Every structure is written in structure tokens, then in C-alpha cells.
Image (tube, rainbow, N blue to C red; front, side, top):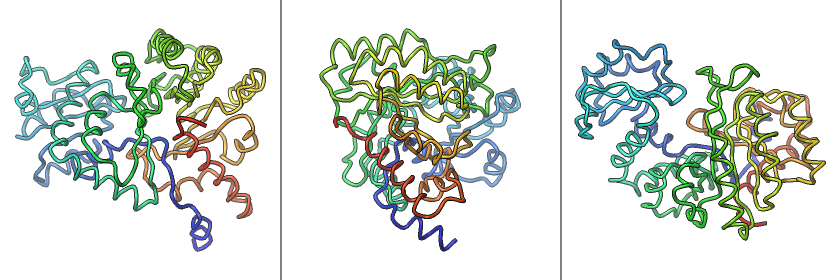
Length: 372
């Protein structure tokens, strides 16, 4: 343990290129709990202003759940693990004056309503809450953060605060960008975020050829690229980030997205998670990068989750592909110093480990740059 602390000592002023600050804030404020905690938390008669329940198995979304949350007189919002279904209680419906006071199970079309309600609640003390967030990041030596999925509503919250402690940059929701393309000119906006597939926990990762869980409309990607090419090619760097869990999702980005990005020199591709990227997929993308001279036009942004490769293995290809590392907090812990060591070969000497980790955090720094 002492050696590990020594290894980590030089990791100061970290940057976190993939996290979810507003979801972390909800957790800090005790507004958010995991589904597994729901019954025990409410049985203690805790006083909540609002309760957001995350990672709910879709199999648990039924009348029993509806009846249970309706027995409490404060707003409760239950989110499925793939974020495609919500269950809300009658107090929530009353608060927002929803047209159907008996519609408790919602699909993602109402995501914006839920977002608006939460942000309205948080906005009353936006600067104070920002400082709470900043304190949490600073405790972990993190001074720059990228919100990896900034909706229009989240963006409005951020615009209310003076970011005088920790700088928060944004990857904006693709639908938000298409309605407001000029947002890319905001110094805090680094790029645009797409979801190719869902999560392993809800079996929506696009893993096999015959099971297609394509969440995005490919035309959306085309439209975003066209807007950049027509109006913003003069900007030095714009990042297109793709949530990419399954091996087939990775192949989709390789063969359906990368060839289009090649045509627009100021677009940098971020592939998030890469959890199930296999060796064949990795070798193919390296070959594409070499063939098209795309060195450092592609970044793999890893998180504290299981991967096919150790980071030191990926480091061998540092001349071709960038390797970033983010917390994905609050899904995982915010402690980047601790978690990154789990993905490096434990048999490596201290000097080699340090060299690899310094490289990864240098890549993190690059992911915050809008110009070279």
C-alpha cells in the first residue's frame, strides 16, 4: 500500500474527461440513491425534498413499484438502468401540473420534463451547489472536468454559475446541438455526444451481429458533420464522442462514422468506454488510422470498468491513438489515482507505470483543448 501511495504521489492537478457532475451533485445532496437502496432508505422515514432512484431493472417496473412510491408525499423519480423508462409518483405529477395525473410510467420522450424539474430544483442554489461539486473534485486533485453528456437543461444550470474553482467543459447532447449549433462557439463546449448503444447492465449493449441495439439515428451523425463542415470548419478542434459499449457498436463507429470524419480535418473522434472492444476491432482501427494518416484524430476514453486490454498494452500504440481515462462518476468512484492502477499490469516496474500514466493524463489534457 505504501508503494502504491508513492506511485500516486506525482499525480497532481488531474483532469477528468468523462464524468457526470450534475448526477454527482444529486448524490452529494442525498437526492439520488441506487434502486437496491430504495426500500431500506424509505423505511427509515428519511426526509427527502426529492428522490431520484437510479439503475432500476426494467423487470422491477410494475404496479407494485408504482403503488409503493405513491405512498410517499414528496416527488420520486425512478430511472431504469438503460434510462429509457421512468416511473414517477403522484406528488411529482402534481408539482409539474402534468396533464395526466395517472400516467406514472414514462418513456424517454419525457426525459426533458424530468431534467427540467430537477434543474429547477437545483437552480435555486446553483452557485452554492457548484461549490459543493468543486470541493468534491478538488479533494481528488481534479481541477478540470468534462460533463460527458450535457443536455440543454444541464447547460442552462451551468450558465448560472461562476466557475471560479473547477472548470467544467461540455460534450453537448447531439439533439441540443442540432437545435442550437451556435453553442459550439461557447468556450466551454468541446464537442457533441452520441449514443450508439446502451449499457451492459440492462442488456442493451450492441454485442452481437444479430442483436442490433442502435440508439442513434445515423442521419443525426450525418447532419452534425454537415453543419460542422459548412459552418465551423475554421474551428481548430471539435470532438464527436460516441458512447460505445459493445464490440458491434465499436465496429459501427469504425465503419460508419470514421470514414465520414476523415473528410473533416477539424473533427476529433472520441470513442467512450470501449468495454467490449476486441483485439480484431482494435487492430482494425489502428490499421485505418495508419492508412489514412489519422494519428491523434482518434481517442479511446476508458473508464474504471473491465476492458479487454491493460492500459500499458494500448500504450504500445501511442503514436497512432490517444488514450484518455475518466471516472464516469457517479457510476464509478471519483478517485482517478486509485482506479487507473487497476488497469495496468501489476508486474511492471514503477518507472514504466509512471511513464504510462503520465501519457494517459497528458492525453486527458489534450481532450480539453479546442486548439493545438
